[in-house]
Length: 125
Picture 1 (tube, rainbow, N blue to C red):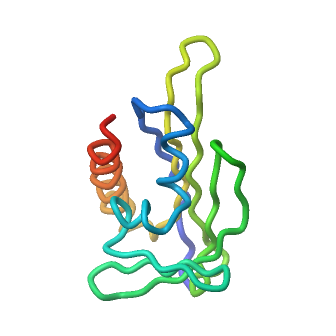
Picture 2 (picture 1 turned 90 degrees about the vertical axis):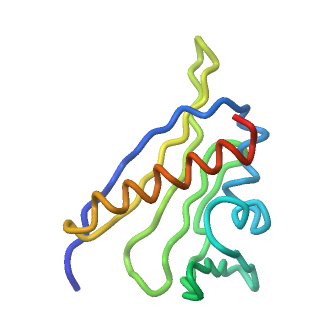
């Protein structure tokens, strides 16, 4: 299997962590911005894009802070979404950690840019 490149992105989100967090964890909320549909059964999330299903397990989370999903069919890769709040300004950012083949990194970044833009419109940020 080809080695993948780690991608780290950060986006300013005009929302409180309490409002943002369910959109990172709850299947119905994830389906509003992240995938065409999201199903959850027995600890496994099924993310559906263009009639293609990708399965992931929630491997760690901290309420109003971070979620990490590990792809079941793409060991050892994962993706993580972390809410970062500046202690002085209270500004909220969403940090994304993902992996992609080197030749797909720019496309993967564009997908995240579009997804986060859509998330911001969904939550009114």
